[in-house]
Amino acid sequence: MKPLQKKLKKFFENFYLVLVLVFLYAPIAVMMVLSFNSSKSRSHWGDFTLRWYGQMFESTAIMDALYNTLLIALLSALIATVLGTAAAIGISSMKKLPKSICMGINNIPMLNSDIVTGISLMLMFIAFGISLGFKTILLAHISFNVPYVILSVMPKLKQTSRYTYEAAMDLGAGPAEAFFRVVFPDILPGVLSGFLMAFTMSLDDFIITHFTRGAGINTLSTLIYSEVRRGIQPTMYALSTVIFVTVLALLLITNFSPSRPAAAQAKKAGPGPAFQKGLLVFVSFAVVAGISYTSFLKFSSSHSNELYVYNWGEYIDEDVIRQFEEETGIHVVYDLFETNEEMYPVIEAGAIQYDVVCPSDYMIQRMAENGLLAEISWDNVPNVSNIDPTYMEWSEAFDPGNLYSVPYCWGTVGILCNAERLEELGVPIPTKWADLWDPRLSGEILMQDSVRDAFMVALKSLGYSLNSVDPAELNEAKDLLLAQKPLVQAYVVDQVRDKMLNGEAAVGVIYSGELLYLQEEAEALNLDYHLQYVLPEEGTNLWIDSWVIPWNARNKENAEAWINFLCRPDIAKKNFEYITYATPNKAAFELLDPEYQNNRDVFPDTNGLDNSEVYRYLGAEADDLYNTLWKEVKSR
Image (cartoon, rainbow, N blue to C red; front, side):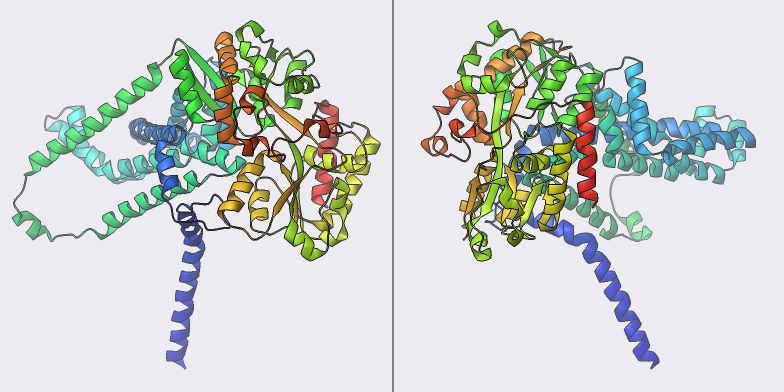
């Protein structure tokens, strides 16, 4: 039995190891495969392509984020290593009590939550009047890296004898020479370990960078986070694959490079030790000089003619930004937000002074009511005449008198249907919101994971306004959502696209701006079922995203030049073809191909939207009530 037991033990050990490796690397393998998929869908395979890799290297945002990540990591690691090593030497020479106190203080940042450290550093920078940007990220990374260097160097210092240092001094060496000839070689492994730890921590950091980065500065961590929040693009798969393969190659080279016996190395002809040391010093000097020069450019670069733009992700064609800079000579500092609720406190705090922002309807109303917007000088925006008067009229629901905003994109919220799946279930195509309570649709409904959108569906099906603040009406809507919940497959945001493309659900609540993407993907993948978009009879949310100028904008005329540029017909057309969200620009609409003009899903007949409404800001008390009721729906 013993040989059999040993075989079984060996088998289960190997099986467990393989299982762990599969769990670790299967997601990475899937990501790498998707980076070669011509389809943007994560559930359907198109053709093999290298397009996403090309777009990755062409993307200014990705390349800038990669550059910033490597520069900040290398520079912060170098500075933290010098400061941490010096601090470790000083602490090691202290008496027991002061040393214990210093090491205790040193451990606090590592035990402290990253979010506390990030917020504290942000508040400190703001209090001292330091504008958030590259320099604040660098200072923050140095701050949280130094303790790790100290902890790496201290054990090596304990292993060194101070008597050897004193002996070197007695033999005539100066303090610096004695340190670099006697002490430094002994602690070098700890110093290198501290440097690598600092470099890795800086590369991997997100939270502290998020709070201290300011406008126009992204690292890979913040860029990938914003991509995940709004729906990750295939270029991110390509970038992650390149990073993984690079790291894997370095590990293979390091661990499997052939080693020669010392005698063979001694016999091998080649450069002597002096040459090798000189080459190492030269390379190190070149690296430090390159980092110092690029860092100097980062700190000292300033544009006398700037524009700070704050916009949603994937909400403008990058060529439009370059064209604006070329035509006007105005340098654009472009920054992204993921939600209106994320954007609002940034503008309210005023720590970063953006010149032009693109919020949604109800948030524009809130910003205007709280004095956060500047009136637009219409003499500087003559191209506003290209905006269809219908949308300017709709905008008065949240911007009375059209004082603060210019419509940029618009759309509706409707029901996306899988006609074939509905036919299998024996359910007709929905025509109203109330149809989403049909028991035959159990497990076939995708609802938006958004408090206002979910309550909009319920309120409209009950015949109430989607801007209702009546507690009785809202509680009735809550009860209706609770009654629907057993029928709901999932509450989702961007995932509704892939789930519907994959045929995983019969109906889903979706934004009309997603339709062109879905239609093009369905055609490219030759799907054997038909996706149909329905605007419910009870009416729906009619949303508008518009450009506004914050009250504290430093470059108001540049902001108005930006808005005027985006209202130009050829530019608005170019933007529409990139983001596929309906344009309110009448002149640009006339330039579109007939297939777009006649697409009633993307450009519905405005006469059929009489029962639809624009979201309005309902006040803090109403917001609290909505959120409380929504939590009750989600938690049951």
